[in-house]
Length: 263
Image (cartoon, rainbow, N blue to C red; front, top):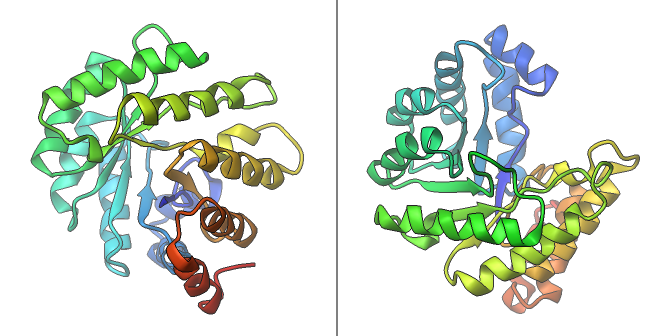
């Protein structure tokens, strides 16, 4: 299970303030907490700023000064990505592409040139896929476009798009069905989601997040954008993996327990 740590995102007020004030210490503390908690990639997002490329480059430099965990460059701006990706020390993940040509065409060459992994959203010029069938149709288009560039399916992470349950009570079910079908119909491809979207607007959001994550793992989800420092969430994840037979001899679970990462 691949974990992309979500906390360094400029949509969060405290992160946005730290970027504005160039508070490197605060950002580095966030990075280290997430690294210690068990992340595989650390997401960096400066999309709230007009000078996104400059702010994103600053984030990359600051985070790389304290950890060697690879980064997920979270930007829909091809120009910002092209200006920042040369300073990334390890092959990154790019978040994200979709079927819109204005986003797809400039970013795919970066994925190829820098041997990056890429998150692909089930979204096109005309729709943000809400039904299972629409998600599968767009996933098929994404697989076709990505593989045509010679990008291995192992580097492709399809996000079926999870809408808040508070506004669409069938969104989670459609995404769960799509995750299962994507894994069956496109062997080798990965699935990913921005976990907290599912609970937006609901009380006790963490309970909804944990429950959805465990259900999605059972359907074949193999990566997620989440907060690994949430011990209850991380513990539920690790326990689910041993129950699903994805942690041989429970070694990762035991290791996480001994390191104090389980709640």
